[in-house]
Image (cartoon, rainbow, N blue to C red; front, side):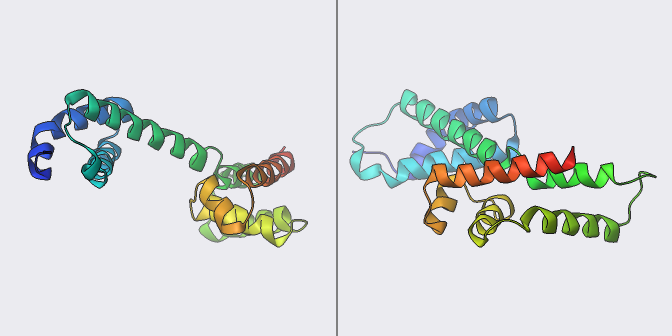
Length: 164
């Protein structure tokens, strides 16, 4: 029979946290990953007969790698970076007020979305603003993941072309 959750947490928690810290190099992300690792194991506790160190080590590694992949997809090329480039390129003195920054960003987004359909706008907002993954965005918009990826790529290319 599987040990109680508290016993497992006390026994394997420090090792899982060390592994998460090593992979993620960020204390907050490591703590989140450790918690996710134990939650995944706890959710499947009925199917587990016995656990060992390598099981936790592997589970922690997988959770961390999935977090890294999700962060890359979610934050790979955010519109904020592109907007900052546009704002920087339009500033002569190098000092803009918050109003000017907002106006520049709004102006750029209006230009960027003027020839796009509503679905593309919705996809961009869900992915870049709300931070949903490609899969979550596809599910909400009834598109395939490749369809979402294609629309976002075209929008990014249009934004980059307009900056250059």
